[in-house]
Length: 110
Image (cartoon, rainbow, N blue to C red; front, side, top):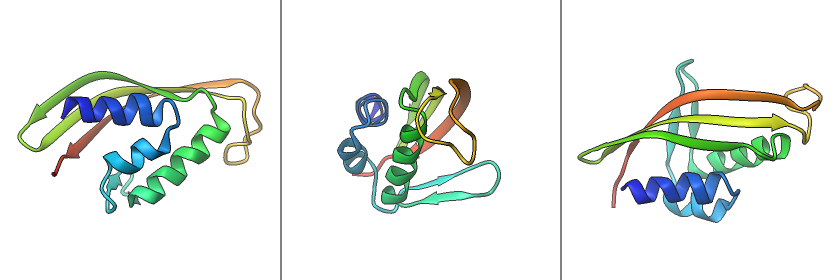
């Protein structure tokens, strides 16, 4: 399972190989956020990632910790990027950097 996560993050997300993300996530993949919002579906996930990459061409995730138990996997990570591409939600690109820590819990099936 760890290899699946590493492939998804390091090859898919970090290199922008969306075909990897399309094969490592279920069609009904759902991401739930602390603010109550949800990102539903693999296709929606890929669209959001592509939008993020257009604004932050260097965006990358660094995996800090991975814990596996049964069919669950927890990934603690840091996401970093620089706003040098397209405007991001009305913010003009001027080399602004961001860093965001996060935790994702996955359920792995099949």
